[in-house]
Length: 383
Image (cartoon, rainbow, N blue to C red; front, side):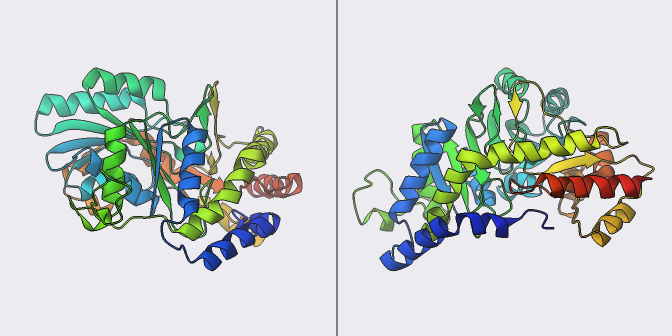
């Protein structure tokens, strides 16, 4: 069994994907080909925002958002403690100080009450300027944006939605990547919508920011006259080389169609099978609050402290079932932040989660038989 069966997905979509790749190879439009604009338009319409700008990867997307806002030295950026490293790495790379915030023990997302505590503390201390929040849609579930947006408005903070794992999720019909002042996502292969390499995208309704993002993505080029063929050689700021390759956009177009047509619905069915099968066990199962819809990047359970996680993983592996730990170490305890203000975080929920979470095999192509096997082996191992 594959943890996320990308091979099965390719078998299903092979005719469309192969045709798309061959078309790009034949056209030789490897950089900034027409598929880029087609994809950006489709993604913006799906999310419900004015602008989508693709880039080289999800990490660059966050960095470019920070740079667009002028985030830098002396600024505090509030980031959930339980997340992938890039969410805090990118503000730090721009010279800012990530302030790590504890998470809700059931949704795994940033706890709004803890966020307000952290913001109030930074403002009271006066050493840093509170500038922005990076809210992560972890494991496919959008964060509590109603509460987080209210806090951002109260304290005049910019809000960035890190939807690297959350693309396709929604709250009361409003799509992920539409909640932040700027939102970002990743097309890393294992993400809900993934390409065949690295890729990312940035979303915003702000025209000025969109122009700046496009400029930063291509070496700080002049974007004031998009029809000028020499504009890319007029570099008006320091930027990055961060473009999505045409062939990746071409691959994403048929994958995006499948994603919209059935994959998000199907992965929700698979998650529901897990929840039904495991409901009577000692595991703490993931929840989706009322009005929320998850794209289920991961199905992550919490083990009782009495269960040896490594031993359980070993038993599952013997049965041919892979499992993963996302995440084994809190952000504030990462070595990169040792000795910095970022390490001074009180995140007891995150610390407990890091020692008890376990993610199970999940993708839209898993069958009921696959899930029944995983459930049966888990129950056997827990006896």
